[in-house]
Amino acid sequence: MRIFSACKQAQPLQVNFPGGLNMDQFIPGRRRKDKVVVVLGATGTGKSRLSIDLATRFEAEIVNSDKMQVYKGLNIVTNKVTEEECRGVPHHLLGIVDPDADFTAVDFVHHALTAVDSITRRGRLPIIAGGSNSYIKALVNDDMEFQSKYECCFLWVDVSMPVLHSFVSKRVDQMVDARLIDEAREFFDPLGDYTRGIKRAIGLPELDEFFRNESFLDDVTKARLLEDAIDKIKANTCKLACHQLQNILGLQNQLDWKMRYLDATEAFLKRGLESVEAWERLVARPATMIVGRFLYEDDMDFMSAIAVPPPIYQIIETAQSILIPELSLKVLDSSIEGPKVLVRTVSKEFEEEFGNSAAASTTIAHLVAEKGTDVNSDKSDDGLECANTASITIGSITHVKQFF
Image (cartoon, rainbow, N blue to C red; front, side, top):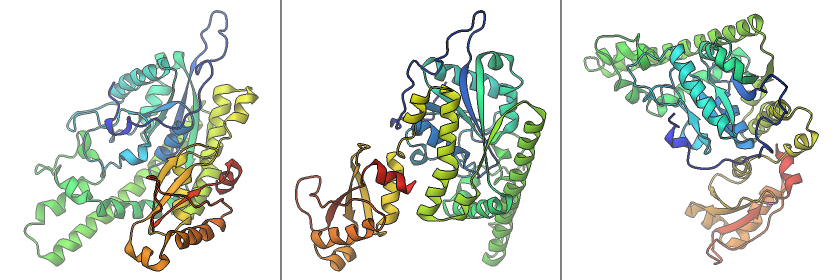
């Protein structure tokens, strides 16, 4: 089973499982099932974000269940997670299938079961995440082998539809800015066949008319045609979100799945640090507690242990949001007791404004102190005092918890 190469290098912050995932004693005549987490939600609700959050807090690997993201190529069009977004978490069934192949639910069950078996054999937690609910149903509900081996915890991430539609529209604009059009052009089919493989992805059929005519049209007409195509992409993505929501509601009503509901709407309405805080408070932290109880049930020692400070990447993001935009951050010491972050200016304007390291440190101290953190002047990582360098310590665990 291939693991998405861009996601498998770094090791995530982990919570070790004493005795492995399956700690319960065997019941006579019946094997205790291993455990799997399933993250459900419409497109754009943050399924990938939550699954990666959980994987950085538990020893976990992610199995993709998005039927377009299993294909190679079109990383922007299909909105695959980037290497940075993966945060070192291994991903399976991501970009492994030939673009022209027919990858059915039967194929998914075979590959996903192989991946889940591999993950559990290595004492790690499988997290299945993706928007293709028919794939998840085929694996979890319809496959007897999976049912005989595994017990599932279902997390449903939701965002109110008006808010989600607004977010999806902005996300499409961001994808266009990230060269979605150029990427889609490479898969343009002169025969107009968008019924097989990755060519079914939203973003290709909608651009067909534009690609067919762009070389014959004047700039004004071409721009209008492109705008119409982008509007269709937005509309069809919103329709997909509504369809996926209906599917989830159908699964909830028809099957005996105890879904744990997580409303991320507030996190989508806020911006910057407030959005990060809302996501942690309303989605990531409750999901962590739900998964902890699912894995360890009445083991209260573990339940107290999983209330850990946020991963180091969140601490860095917090510092970035506190400090002025001209600063860049580099981790010096990832100790939970007080991670140090080296702050270096990246523009001459900052040097001209603040002059020397003492002034810079004072300014940084003022900015960070407003958030209740400790700030210490320090030397650069090469031991030399630099005119535009300062170091801050992001407080203690208590201070850090105040942010999230």
